[in-house]
Image (cartoon, rainbow, N blue to C red; front, side, top):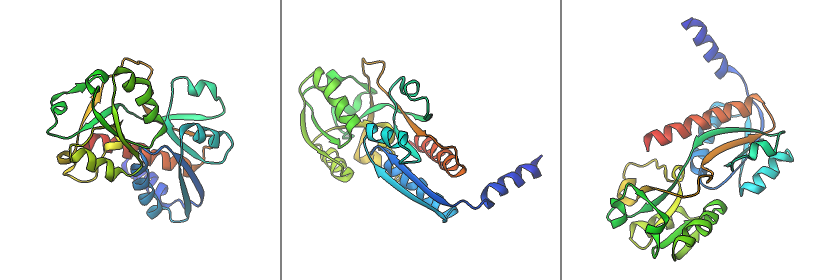
Length: 230
């Protein structure tokens, strides 16, 4: 049995994959996706990969029109029922977290409510889902000052590290590869009264090719390992 398992594993890596893999993704998990692409290209150099950063609606449209092979997005409840021709596969569960300076009074909490954030200064990533969440839930709970909106993660981290602001995002957006991340920011789960807030990253595709399947499996593994490492 062990020999057969080893043969099967060897066959997987001896397969020569080629072709063109197009991926569209929301901004949050982009750093994880790039890491997976790096390893994937080393093992399968004949696969040409293109990745596009887009909003969820555009991603779904691209999948439906066969313009991309894999779409990675936060999936609202019932989305899979609306599009029968698309295969939705959950890659990970996510949750909204607040990023604060480790010495902030907010850092003493194990969970934060939107009401506790009233009056805070906020910096957020330029992401449609996060901006929509801020408008629908946080600003209704109390006034907040938005210092800036940017796709520059270093600028956001620097603002939090300097104690100028707090930030929010999906927990997987804060997965770091360096050990001293805890010195810069502490993340705390945000409790929302909305029970239907989407919180899972899914891959949406219309093709079941070997290349697509292998890439999705690697991505799922990296998500799981990243959350485990914290």
